[in-house]
Image (cartoon, rainbow, N blue to C red; front, side, top):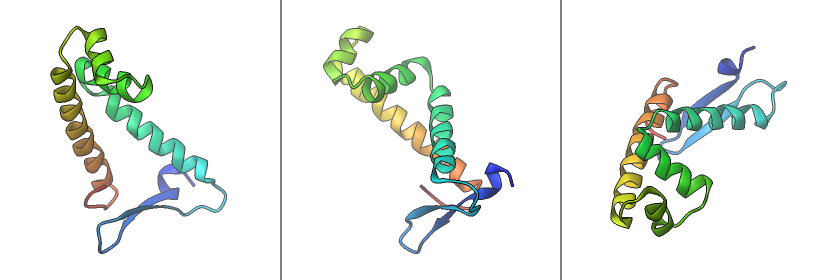
Length: 105
């Protein structure tokens, strides 16, 4: 059974999404790896400026002021870019979930 067939998404009446691992031969690591690949792919598709603020904030753990210094822009610009990146990632990951029969993640 392929990884694509072993993981499915279910959404309850409250809109909460649950990942289900169907194949008892697979582990939760399979699901975690698939999730991580989906997130990485969505981040990789961001524009360079948006991708950079996401990486600096969430991978490197930098504060807005530190990101601004690295990128040569204001903290407000960092906040704006992070906001745009969040919205883009939400839309792309929601589209991914929709291909698996879920309305929203």
